[in-house]
Amino acid sequence: MYKVLIVDDEPLIREGLRTIVDWEELGFTVAGVASDGVDALAKLPQLQPDLLIIDIRMPGMNGLALMRSIREQFDPAPRFIVLSGHADFDYAREALLMRADGYILKPVDEDELSSALVSLKRTLDEQEGMDGKLSSLSWSLERTAVSLLTGEGQSPPKEALNALRFGGPPYDVVLIKLQSRGEVDAPTASHVKNRLFESFEASGKGVVFSLDPHLGLILAGRATESAANYREMKRICSDNGVDFTAVSGGAVERLEELRRSYRAAEEGMKLRFLLEGDHIYRAEEAMALMPADRETDRAFGEADGDKLLLALDIGSQEAAVLWILETGEAMRGAGMDEQDIKSVFAQLFTQALSKLERNRPEVREQCRAFASEVLKLYGEYRFSGLLARLTELAGKMADAFRSYGNDKQVQKMVELIRRNYAENLKLESLADVFGYNSSYLGKLFKSKMGESFNTYLDKVRIDRAKELLEQGMKVYQVAERVGYSNVDYFHGKFRKYVGVAPSAYRKK
Image (tube, rainbow, N blue to C red):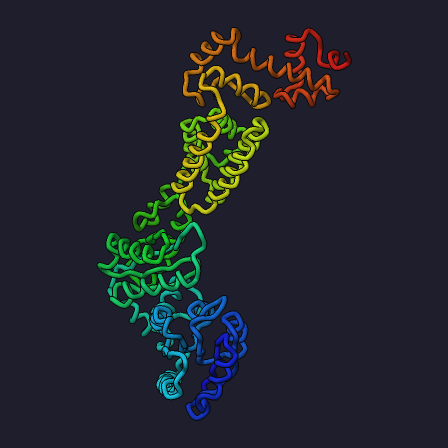
């Protein structure tokens, strides 16, 4: 007797299927029932059914996702008969493309189910007679491909290898990563895989396989030409609302060398964040995007965000965009991975907004709204897309903050100093932000204010230091609060402008 597991979320249908046919007369026995896909996966190891009768629509994990999960986890996988309503034709079509053994409309007709079981029993008997679970019949093209690529599990028999020699050498492994700003769900991935099967495997161009988190193709002979293959992949993915990156491991002459091509494609795919996704990348082409002389000791901290803070404060989109591009390139040059790049950008942007909020209470709401927008950068799956999102965001920030300033450059500098005196302000940094030569900007400032930029900055800091000392704050705390990291240096500046030491002034 062949064992059957019935999977349906409707109790009446589960029990009805138990009695609708004489299972034993047809050579089957109902070993158990499951209420959904998760329940079925839990019962599968113990029951070890030969056949699953699956409802295509179930809450949580639907029938297609269950079939895909079983094929990935169990080898050999059981057979499948799919149940569906009239409205589920597209799902049913996908199930058949996933090699389901039958498709029956609800309500289930007794004769139709019996006929499907008789046909399936004949197939199972033939397979069993050839020691099916160990024979080449159980070696699908996908199973053979995965075995060769990973080197894991039982070695495929000669007959299975011969079936894989569909187009002759050379052979090439292409890995495909489905991508979206949101999560790519299992049904979408399954649909894409089935469409790839139609376009490549069914037409004899290649073998389609799944090796989480990638889909893949083994192409052979003339089918390894990548331009047409890329266009077909793009059409399929676009139809399903997802983007993708594809990396080729390179051509090999023998099936036994496929693992080398697969490993190379895996290494290239690790750099997918840097790839534009506009063609099928060769592995060596992807690897070449990572600088050989990486600045691995380059660290990014709060000081890296100072120029961004100044650019946003004066509403300079040009300076903010330049900072984004230069910082992004520096992170890429340091060999940082996708998550580190995103984390550093998020940290530097939120720090700049936090300081801006503290220094300019009138823009508090804008700063908090933009801080929430910054977090959306984590949805970007390409480096270029990340820079584009940050550039667009910086433009919106500059527009919002510019409206609060004065158009005169010197007045902007004065306001900037009064708001950010505690930061590491330098004339050279402001010159970059304002788009002027530092020497010219210094002369412009002195002509308008009657004293140099550094003198004016020191006086603003010392005036604030006097206020804090009068409040009873300790000298070293005041020094740090107004922007002097060296207490002795602060002593010298304070005595120069006030005439007494900070400690003496505090005692007055």
